[in-house]
Amino acid sequence: MAWDFETDPQYQELLDWADQFVTEQVEPLDLAFPHLQFTRLEGKRREAIDPLKAQVREKGLWATHLGPELGGQGYGQLKLALLNEILGRSQWAPIVFGCQAPDTGNAEIIAHYGTEEQKKQYLHPLLEGELFSCYSMTEPHAGADPTLFTTSAVRDGDDWVINGWKFFSSNAATASFLIVMVVTNPEVSAYQGMSMFLVPTDTPGVKIVRNVGLYGEADNHGSHALIHYDNVRVPAEALLGGEGQAFVIAQTRLGGGRIHHAMRTIGLAQKALDMMCERALSRETQGSRLSDKQFVQGYIADSYAQLLQFRLMVLYTAWEIDKYNDYKLVRKDIAAVKVAMPTVLHDIAWRAMQVHGALGVTNEMPFLGMVTGAAVMGLADGPTEVHKTTVARQVLRDYQPTTDTWPTEWIPRKREAAKAKFAEYLEAEVGNL
Image 1 (cartoon, rainbow, N blue to C red):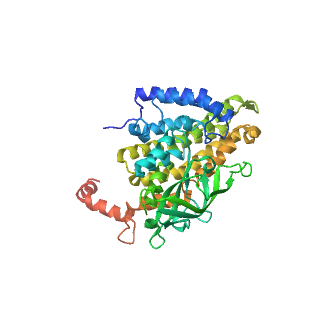
Image 2: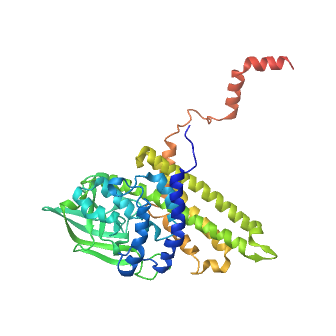
Image 3: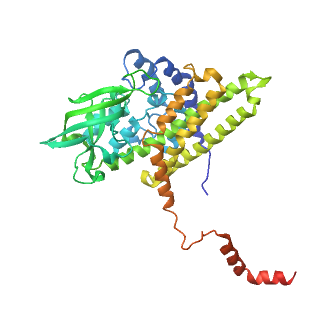
């Protein structure tokens, strides 16, 4: 019987190294070079960060989930989950370890669906961390329902011409190329009539109208672009995976993206719990430490239980992905993880913020950023409500309605059946009374 919650000793040593490395070498990058992790490395930043990437490569932890043919170790999703728990503490860590979103998901679909020429042009430099990418899917009027998308690509000779608008195209401002989801055949169902194109960001007609920020960020200094595709001409070779394949490709990408977000969220939530516990042990009020107050103890206990449940859920789902090697077969559990993720991060970060008192709500502590991040996780890669619907539908497939008025577990009927089953014993029992 294979049922083990231990990490093999060799990989645990690597995780221990990564834990210390991220704490001492990588987390300081968040403060030294804030919000620059998706900006092309140049000058002193390159001098500071390239040696860190080299150390990761020497340890065999660069893009570990990818196969050796793509420069990784082929460790799979479960081992990536254990590593991402550590990397989730730092904005720079996924960059240094070669597994940052959205590039991991984008690399995965190019590796799976791209031509050799596309891999050479986009995939290899993406995996080397020498350029960044953007997944341009959501539109101003439609996000959760891609069948409402109107951005289109029309054939013109040997080219395609793209027209339309995309919204919340993350990292477009610093990306070298975009993966754009468009309508190529409006005469058929959107599930067969949409395609994806690889579009360099410097292609004429790609116009970033503004870079939308999250709450608290300065106007036009965010990382989520509103893009106008105005007669953007690309060659036929820019088509990714074949005409009409957008939905198939999207599910491959988004399934991986969702579970990777969850892996990193474990690390961020753990960081909030660590800060909460430290604060509780460090502060006194009304004659005793905060850690002696039952309210605070409740915060800590609830947070620990939530995080443990979520972590086990994520690790199990990662194990399933490795086992079946098919995101569709794990769709229910990926969606369930996506549903749980924002609540876990929000609740733990909010409690930690409360335990820190007034300091907790200032920009000298990271809690409100975590809370905003939790809100983002409830919308990115599909809103929570849509994923709840997916989970419910998948769960209900394993059930059948009752065949009569009463539920299967209706006690009066089951009691009569039990009496009939054990009638000879019951009669003897009565006779002995």
